[in-house]
Structure formats: C-alpha cells, structure tokens
Length: 325
Image (tube, rainbow, N blue to C red; front, side):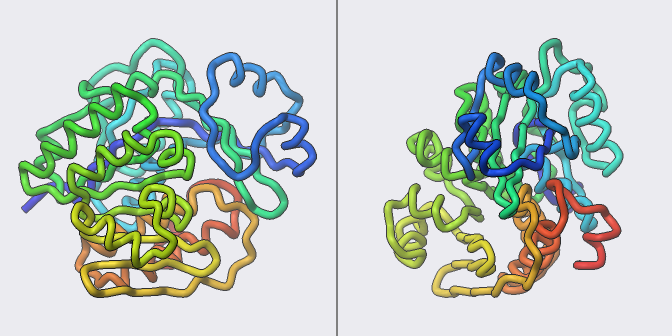
C-alpha cells in the first residue's frame, strides 16, 4: 500500500486578485484571457498602480489542484520553491493547514522573492494573469523527493513548469522515476500559452508517457494540430492513456481507449473562472484514485469547478467542497 495518493509538482505563487473593467485592462496594455510571464520590473510597475486588491491567498495551478484533492479527503504532498518572505510564509501555512506534505516541514526557505500571480477578473468572469515567477523560476531537481514519489500512487505535473529550463529538467527526472517505479503520471497543459510558446518542451514531457493528460479544447488543438478531439486523442494515444478535456460551460469529455464520455456543464452564475480547471483536475483525480469510473470522476470535476466559478478566488472552503463530493 502506498502512503500517499498524489504527489504534486508545480510553481508556488501567491494569487493577488483584482476586479477590473475591460477598459482598465486595456489601459494597462494587458492581453485579455491568457497568462503572461512578466519580469520583476513589470511586476513592480503593476504593484505601483492604484489598483484595489480584492483577494490575496496562496495559489498556483498545481497547488490549487492538490488543495482541492486534499479538501475532498485525499492524501498528498506538494513540491515547490518559496522564499523566506511574507508571501512564502503565507503559501506554506496554507499547505500545512490543509495537511498537505511539503519539504518546508524539514528545511528552511530560500533567500529571494516568492512568486506572485496578479489576476485581473473582468465582469464577464474571464481571468487574465500576469505571473512573476520570482524564486520558483529556479525550481529544480533539488526540490524533488524521490522517496515520496515512490510512495505515491500518482505524480501530477503542472504544465507551467516547462517555461523554466531547471523546472523542465526536474519534471523529466520526476516522470522518468515515477514510470520506473510503477507510479502513474498525470499532467496538465495549464494554459494555451504553454503549448504555443513552449511546444517542444511540453511535447518532451508527453513523450515520456502520461497516464492522464488534462487540457481545454484550445490547448489540445495547439499541441496536436488536430481539429477534432477524437483526432487529437488518436494522435496522443501512443503516449497518453486517458485524455480529459474541459469544455467550459459545456462540461467535460474523457477519452480512454474506445470509450468517449461526455458530461454536461452545470447551470451556474459565472463570476470568476480563476482556478476552475485546477479544481476540476483535483476533483477528477480524487475520483479516479478512489475507485470512481471515468464518468463519475468527470461529474465530480464538473460539480466542483461549476461551484467555484460562482465565487471569487481559486479555491472553495472545505465545507463547500465536501457538499459536492
């Protein structure tokens, strides 16, 4: 028996959320609807703007996934890199409160600046992200605990990590080790910008073999160059066991061998899509690793992400998420 269900690998970012109009977004010269990596100068420039912070909390794509997975009752560990600053303390305290294992229980934090993700939410619920990676840019193999991976049922890899050479190498080490030791591998494409600007790097991880690949329709189209999801799965299938596709308000689809399962979306009042795909993945993986069928896992993911878009921020409370279980 494995001690842990899920070992997550990803950036450690503190989310700083703003509620803005399309006009304000335009005045900031920010392209709507995508994640853009920014440098320290651009981050300080945004910090200096007269913008009201709506919410601030620990975030990051894979961290949100592991958080939701743990709230549902799954056991987990998260590998990341934070600095010895206030944001780093906030991030690690969030993990500890949720009983998510992390290397900072035993080792000190690093000098530098913890990464942030400035999230601009417009009235239509769309989120636009400006991400300053900070110290997580130097995430590397030293952040990987192979013994804990070996004692986990599944490794979960965040697609955003392909933007950093040292993090990409760490992902390759972790995936190869997992495959060699009978640990399943799941991966998310994270954002259209990753397969667009880092297509070769993203493909290099998929080529190692992925048991479950998460992506939305746009991301799957970019990485495969195929017009239909069926064709995309056929192209990915030699390296991907199960393809899980989020389809926004239309729900989600799962492809496994000859099986294709579609689950409709929830009727919700969407005000903020931040973290919806992350929580979907966490809920799906909880179902999958706890004996649920492909359909049941998709349904749990859709229920949880459907509820999340009705509130501001990337996470639900434990009480809220358990009602959806």
